[in-house]
Image (cartoon, each protein chain N blue to C red):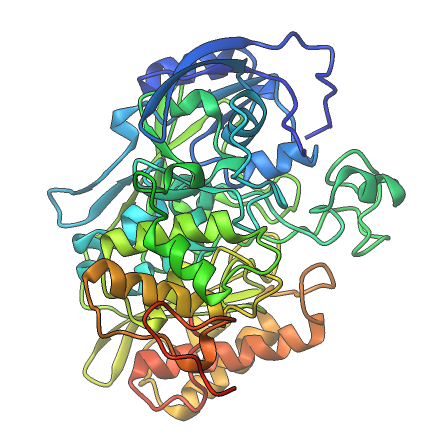
Amino acid sequence: MEQQDHSAMEHQQVFKKLSVNGEPHSVGFSVHHSLLEVLREQMQLTGTKHGCELGECGTCTVLIDGQPVLSCLELAVECEGREITTVEGMMIGNDLHPLQEAFADLGAAQCGYCTPGILMTAKALLEENPAPTRDEVVSALAGNLCRCTGYHKILEGIDWAAAKMRGDEDFRPPREAIYGDPLPGEEPSDA
Amino acid sequence: MLRLPAFSFHSPETVTEAARILAQDPGNTRVVAGGTDLWPNMKRRHQGAKTIVSLRSIPEMNGICVDDKGGVVIGATTTLDTIIRNETMQEKYPTLVKAITSISSPVLRNAGTIGGNLCLDTRCTYYNQNEEWRRSISYCMKAEGDVCWVAPSSPRCWAVSSGDSVPMLCALGAEISLHSADGERVLPLAELFNDDGMDYLSKRPDEILTRVRIPAPSGERTGYWKLRRRGSIDYGVLSVAAAAWCSGETTDRIELWLGSVGSTPVRCDASIDHLTGKPLTAETIAEAAAMARKGDGANPLGNTDFAPQWRGKMIEKYVEAVLREVAGLPVERLAPHHG
């Protein structure tokens, strides 16, 4: 199809109630704006990152009705009546979500740009499958790219968070996965 | 931020209403369900629309049901993830589920739909680029330009059909329903596609693909393999689907389809003729695989990932592997990991 210049076209505005992180928000925006644009620019929820904006990188992943989807490819106008969860909504009261805690303790975030998307995808996975195998974690994360960590720390972080969420207190991440100070309750390593 | 161009938006609740809106200005209106193909294309200004009609609020276009003949009808806006998780689909068409599981990545399968995969825009290295990149080569024939940069003397566009569900659905004999303000027509899925990178669908602009019907399984043995660089996200550069109906040693009927090797899914007619009425042995399979590479319209060009010559060689390897899998013969190479 020929490219059409619709820049002069009047923007169709809507005023919608969006439920984000359990709170209702009344937001006005143009119908052609993505959920990503509305979250970041109208609602100042900048935890959700914009990466490729073409569906290739996964950093803009949010949960819609508990399912991870890319907010860059979702029209905000279609999100009314659905529950949106972003990384800002992960904390449980004043406590970090076990995934956030495990990622911080294991250095599973390096530059951190992919982290919000990976946390959301991992959260959806663990809510559905509390004890995923390594293959299942890798498959679930197949749409979230990280260019820093080489993924191992991320996978170890998810394993550990899953164990914490299951109440498996005996689980310990591999010693070599621990970055910096020892884990709470652990002896410092000789190294 | 890479933004969508402005458009007016409709979200009808019935197919009739959607078709009515579409009929008002079909050339400047596009329907959307998952948006995983259309939105990137509109963001990069490959495709445009003054009006967008979302099909998501139409209940009759969503869901999976078994029909009275034991076949399955899938609404076009059913997400790929819903299909993969559906127990009826897993039980009746496990190889189709495997093919759909290979599409893109989990987050995209949560939004992408089966109708969108069937109508997927054809792809090309010289087309799927941002506006600045394409402007620097004076665009290409498929969007705004005059030349096909893959084959500059060619009068036609060679963009590639890469819907991963298509070869398997064609092999299984699926049918589709197209609705317009004038009514409904049903046609074999294979007839949806034209061998032209620009005019790649026989669907008229005022028609909406509403559902896919797959015939009841009738003892077929099936296989599907897909080639791409990474295990997810990437579009396939070759997919091979086969379904064989055998009685004893003899192949009564076989369907063999290739995807991502041209502007249309390719039915391997010579290979099919060669195998029909014969047993599936290592020898007949090797012969049929060689025919699939040479004689059936599969024409990998330099407009996807990997060198076209190598992709041509892989057609033979992959067809042989899929047919051996169908025949229950050992396959030397491991099947690629999907998901």
